[in-house]
Amino acid sequence: MRGHGTYVDEEKLTASVAGEVQEFNGEVGDVVVGRITEVQQKRWKVETNSRLDSVLLLSAVNLPGGELRRRSAEDELTMREYLQEGDLISAEVQSVFSDGALSLHTRSLKYGKLGQGVLVQLSPSLIKRQKTHFHNLPCGASIILGNNGFVWLYPLQHNRKRKLEAFTPPISLADREVISRLRNCLLALTAHKVLLYDTSVLYCYESSLQHQVKDILKPEIMEEIVLLTSKSFWNMKARKAILSFPKHFVICNCCGIFTAEMLFDDL
Image 1 (cartoon, helix red, strand yellow):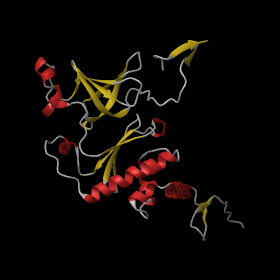
Image 2 (image 1 turned 45 degrees about the horizontal axis):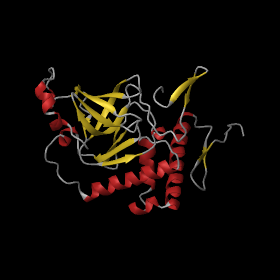
Image 3 (image 1 turned 90 degrees about the horizontal axis):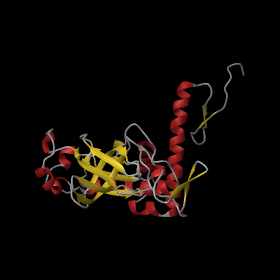
């Protein structure tokens, strides 16, 4: 993407600096999780793991109560009552400026200020693009997989209405353990370059249940859990295939894994 540190050489965009590329180049419609870094006139600056800070305009947020009207000078004076420095938000990319900066909006009820939870910063290249990046996992937690590599984990019962309340009850020990396990599972999948989406995260969580939460971060345990996750994933794909082509797969009596062996009725 064009911007500082690039130049055009023989109709090709070339970087003029050396180093590892870690920035996130967003596209319109991407779901991102970011942190408010500055409150300016009619806008907030948001850190979204990109080269430049993203922009959230005052006109691109929902007013309290869902009121629809033009923003006034009074709204500008009370911007910090909506969002202030350090707040975490989920948003959608509305447009991309010519310099590569992102313009965000939170007009949908599923976007906005985030409540209690855990932020995990990962590589954007490992986030699989899906129709929805908001998932309620059966293990008892919810996850927002931001396209910018920021992943937000929070308790399942904390819906949008609960997140907007001034008083938020403490998270139970069981919920904290689930969120901590999911966080460590994300780090394990990232360490082995596995694509992150709801299915891979859930399979990794189930594969980690035989270990304590703190042990998941050990390299040998990480490798074991990821291998079990891959095995569960391929078994799932094989089960789907055997329903469509029952004569092309058999089940191994030793390990129970589906194998693609041809079965012929005349043999």
